[in-house]
Length: 122
Image (tube, rainbow, N blue to C red; front, side):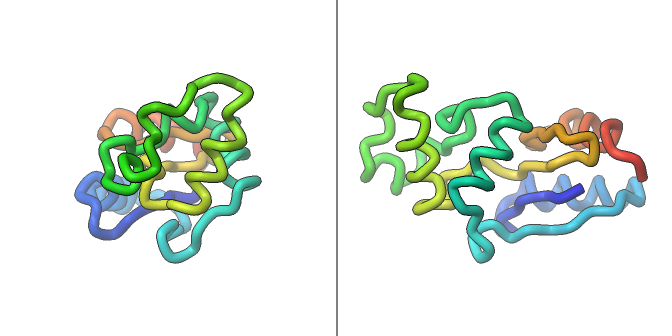
């Protein structure tokens, strides 16, 4: 199991605390330092079953500067959105946990973290 975090994020710290309390084995990826490339973002989106606009932090200043609120949210624009996330990783929603069963969750709640734990053999 891997968790993408921003250490400054309280939701990320809460997710790590819960994983530790449950004795889960996981790898931390500080995605602002170890930026995922377009292929990795696409793969995580497939595991999440989501589109890039679903995991984009559109209220961030960078998103507003890019005008993401006006970008079309349709299949033909998917690559453009993924490219923006790779160039501006701060826009990626966090934390994201990739479970051992091939799925992933945006783990912003305790329930989502527990869902990932249930999908992973410890």
